[in-house]
Amino acid sequence: MRYDITEENNQVIIKNIRDFEPKHIFECGQCFRWDSEEDGSYTGVAYGKILNVKKEGEDIIFSNTNLKDFNEIWVNYFDLETDYGVIKNELSDVPILKEAINFGHGIRILNQDEWEILISFIMSARNSIPMIKKSLNMLSERYGEYIGEYNGRKYYSFPEANVLDKLSLEEVQDCKASFRAKYIISAATIVSSGEIDIYRFKNLSTEDARKELMRFTGVGPKVSDCIMLFSMGKHDAFPIDVWVKRVMEYFYLKKDTSLKIIQEYGQDKFGRYAGYAQQYLFYYARELGIGK
DNA sequence: CAGCAGGTGCAAG
DNA sequence: CTTGCACCTGCT
Image (spheres, rainbow, N blue to C red):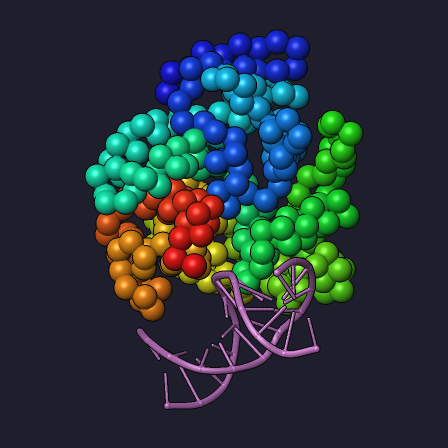
């Protein structure tokens, strides 16, 4: 990807980048720790840093950062090396997808931390996005490290596995984790003990990573696909939540199709770009209420 | 007030 | 291997 980049007083500004829309990126269901500001920008924490992202005209302004962090963290985090034009071009041949891609044209799939995403998507099971965000923020405020203040708000890192594994069931439930609390403590124990090394999974095949992930209680087919897609670079993963199920049935299949069939259909139709297709379809379906 | 949304685990077919 | 139900909380 080619884009022009400049740095000035704690900001990095990118000009001439295509396919980058903060609203699409932060509201397509892949992340929970970014919040919109009054000016339409988004502030969040990743890899121990607070960042604000704003689109002004055709420029993307990254505030509270510098060129070093930008190159070391944010280029990879925002998947800036990937040319989405190539992906869109290929996927546009599939019926209906062209409309979904136009609708969410600025989506990028973030490369997030494996541990944070594992817990985030265990938390997502049978839960709403506002509640997931609330729970993850409570966990971070109470058990993460204080990072600093930005725009009048304090920010905390996501707590490590060797912190969460020492919490009681009640302490995790108090963060509104509900019946998922036991899954979260179990995952923290498994990860901090080294019994399973999730940071190794990005080197496995999608199929093997999926099997390994499902060894965690609270991680089924959908959650494992989300973890692989959003933190392990497995762009052929195809997570099917209720919105994707609805939109797939609405456009391509018939009602009450089993998840297994939809999964096979998606993998077959969208191939190595199934994860990107899933993101465009999810955002399209959810924002427009398709199939509901 | 009851009804509903939302993935996974677990038991039973 | 597939199906049906319980899990828990906030919102309508």
